[in-house]
Length: 244
Image 1 (cartoon, rainbow, N blue to C red):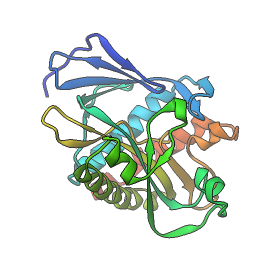
Image 2: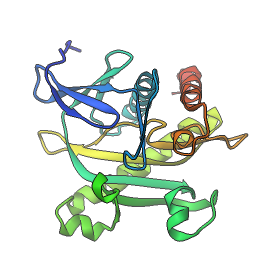
Image 3: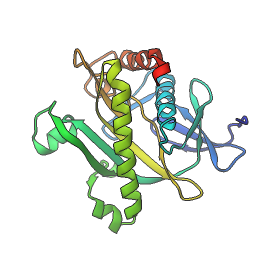
């Protein structure tokens, strides 16, 4: 893989910065130490958080790539950065839920911890000012946020990712409760899984204790947030990779 140089910054979000490279179709993604919750209303900085999310997300993306999932991720460059395909992000977040918790319980009045008979997929419109509202597929189609083919592909890839990640984490004693995915299109118009997959975007519960090993520790002031992220990385990096 040819070396790429970080050029001018083209985007800064809550958790990452994007930079141009010599190739207009490649970008360098740099992870930040920022924590945000409740659409940015709660914020904090924790040294080492960006490193952990980069390591974890790179490991998971590499695992998915070996199983044929179309990704923007190319390779991890260093402890804070990744090389990725430049994509235009669709304004939809795809959430898949295996167990009830969080906003689902609040919205529907159902109890926490119910194992669903099959994965539940939800779409949310990406707009912090609106609180990333839940939307239907018709909303996405009628307002031009995605095509029917996009939605079909996003659901198919999301369910595939869910199966792969459950198989990855179950032997590590980790329950994949739910997670959020984002998708983008490259310059050829191909749909690719993008953004990140980390404790920022997933809910992980310890299979034995039920302890939260994700950003809920920050949201709910449970303490030892980085310790939870470190534990995810310890288990991921220490697994038997001959079976991976």
